[in-house]
Length: 109
Image 1: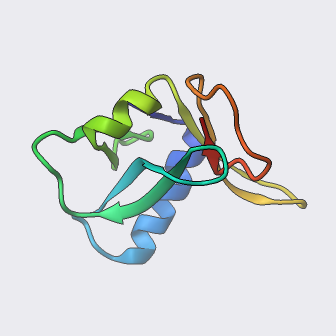
Image 2: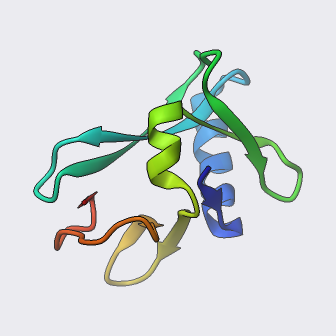
């Protein structure tokens, strides 16, 4: 299961509040594709499958994250962070299972 840093959990909480729906969770998935073989996918989802793994993050544990069983194996030990600088802002995934990543950081093998 992926772990969220406090910065990532705070940003997700902010984005969820903007959505205005209490039943949404952040779904993190790995899909075939991208220039290195697999790509990360993140979106808000209200459908939780019976084989999905779930975890909560943040100071108040209000940020719910769901990961499907196949993606969970590829995300074991991974960390989702959020940073905002003058040069760039966005989510970054650090994945110890990735033997190679592409230049954009959105795909791995």
